[in-house]
Length: 273
Image (cartoon, rainbow, N blue to C red):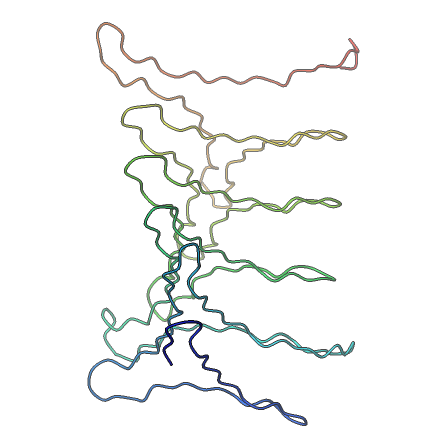
């Protein structure tokens, strides 16, 4: 009920504990309709008008597997969020439901973050974070994976960083970008492109290998593709400096240089270094 001073009442829904059996389920199901859209299930946490306070949280947690049996203890329960299936026969308009996850907007400060993190393990490896599109059906292409930062009107756009974790005793993880194999067609390209600058310098593409303090420094290896086909040619390795596109008669644009420089040796031995 409502209250003029103090907290309003709590609504608690609980099933009973099972002594020799499973605990009961809590099921919420909207009835089927034969005209119009299906009914919604809406859960909204409480808002607050108090200065410095925080709106209510929506928390969904799978059940804990509390058995500590060494042979086969309890597993934690999953949290499954699945959009609705479309049974319609139109290949264009009958689309499966989306799963939308959006952080909260802010009027003055920064908007909320979307954080996805795998589970921690006390004894062994942490869990994986997997993002994948489903395989295509009988015809069609598989879905895209799109990662993009938002646009800005005044100020810099957001950064995109892909990093593996630091290893204290062991090797750090690799970072791989690989296109899929193709049986009847071309394999996909791997393209690194910086954006076009309207009133400033275009961005750089930098490949830098980390420094080794007890062993050799890492290599930068660029290898064109080989071919097994008769009469065909292996791939080329092409390095081309940028063109100076200005045709100004007083001082037009200069073409960029291609600079290849071997590593400097700082050792003091005039024979071995």
